[in-house]
Image 1: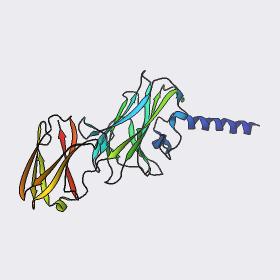
Image 2: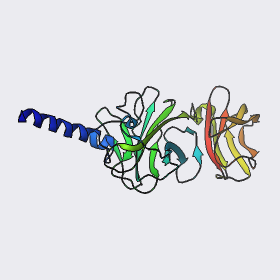
Image 3: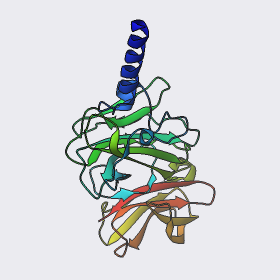
Image 4: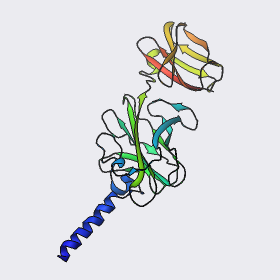
Length: 280
């Protein structure tokens, strides 16, 4: 009889340990994901419930070293990442996970340089990499790291987020979990080298405030189209030009453009290339 009591006691203890809040981060401490991403484990909100903090979670990408937020990515470019948990009332602490997947649900494992205290980058056995808390986060609701976009032709990348606003009672009751997924499209910067167009080029000043000059050297006279795209991939300017053999200059008035990142594309209808510029 005592033997059965001991088994029941240890079973209850084990269950309690498994269902307690993972202050060390679920990926780092248990090797599991807790977002609502396809193929992830149990969502943290299935245990953490009952709280009323008005909690929500979001993620933003910024051009590195700036406050210029982007809604699409340039392949191979490194971005500053902010994960933010917003609440209407202040909890005792926070927890979170962020995961980036391509359209095939393969993890984009390029997280780096997490600068917020008590955070970590953890990779679990199935190869997925998470940005998450490494210990109790009791101050600040914004968590920062870097993430590098994948190679060209990867397509859409979706970030899956799970956030937890906790009362630090030592159990999962009285907490409030939130989730979100955000998709970033790939910015097609170039599909061919400059050698295919037979040109060399430069744009200046970069960054610019009012005017932008394209200096283009062509190996022969040719018809070209110049397009300008904003950071969302929208074509906001298009002009057909005749480039003469040798040096050419084309000027653009960008004073009315909003502050942000833009791409100037040159194409002959078959090949194209692009230059990135910043409007201040």
